[in-house]
Image (cartoon, rainbow, N blue to C red; front, side, top):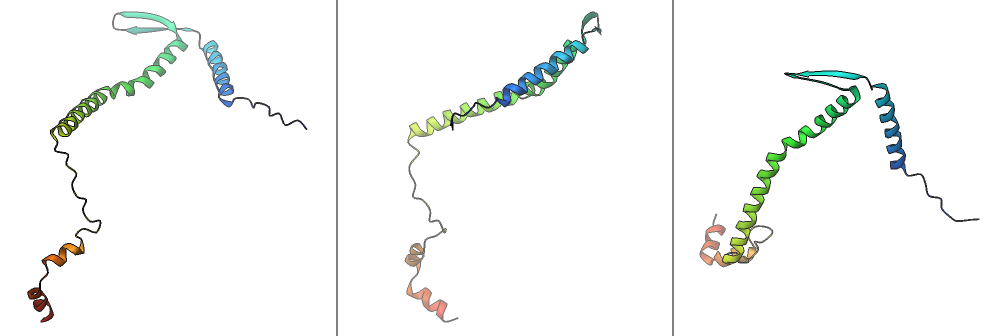
Length: 124
């Protein structure tokens, strides 16, 4: 028996070819010219071009609406980086002792506890 594996057909390539065929059929069926009138301009373009341009604009329009937010986030990031550099250079990033995971350690309570408090608690 021959253990040579055959390369399977690339699914992505097949999908692209099928979509290209559909695009060609769509183009051939919608080749008639359409008159577009906007204010003072009159333009005759193929219907398929009009549809594809509208699809492209509809796809890109939401992406352009995020540009101001991206600019704002970039400026906030640069401000934060500058603040971090200033804090690191000023030396105020001292390592503090980590708190006890349960809150207050029992060892800390024992130091504050003395005999007078014990009498007050036992006489209740």
